[in-house]
Image (tube, rainbow, N blue to C red; front, top):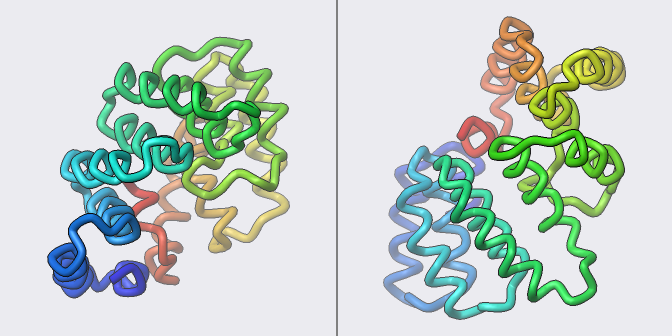
Length: 205
């Protein structure tokens, strides 16, 4: 089902996700991938249920709680998202989860941006351990925190070093929108659609 999702064959994928859950309703992998399917096809509200069921099976999973927090952030339910992040931080005894830190910064940038947040984002943005769903769009964070000139300079610098249709180039759409470069953002989305970038549906959400 997940492979069908990455091919944008969503009707087939949905049927396979549902069948997997019928066969094993408490299977953690089936619940996770179905939640991601729902988020990527424009139904993040419906994804909350499977993700919460998944957390009942794995209550101490920092990664899953971070994904739930990100999904709540997609719905502008920032208070709930930050509550999930706080619980995950309690479970992250070493305080070292890059995924959790990445999601927290992106949710905070939308919810309550501060210059202190921008400083933290700058330190973490170069980390190679942060997975795609928790990736820090540093120019976006800087723009949200009122540092628009700095965000613009960073975007221009990065545009020179990545190909438009590369995953890195496509993920810069959020940054381009944040600094008001809507035409460039649209061109990259069109390029991603033309090249059938696997994660474009999830990224668009």
